[in-house]
Length: 103
Image 1: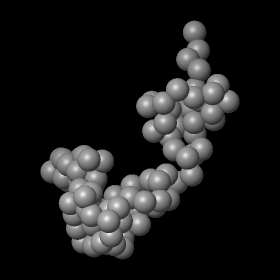
Image 2: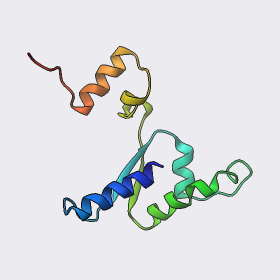
Image 3: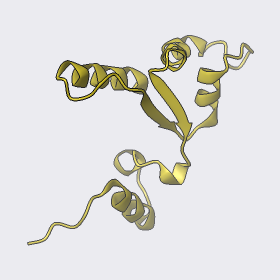
Image 4: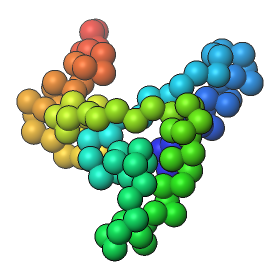
């Protein structure tokens, strides 16, 4: 789903002439989807989900998407999607560039 959304945003930005056709980077903290997208493996465990990765593989093979590993502790999206310890929250908030609002 994320790859589809990234493709849509990239096409919108190209149509608005804000960016050129560039490779988008998708950071994933799970090894399985990354491996399935890069190296299709047909075995009993992945056979039922393989169809979900066709679009992802196609984007990677066409050079429109690059998949990189991201440590779970470095996953900025977790700031908006998961309950976090205050130390993790503050770290990700700083990494995102958020600061305290001054009066």
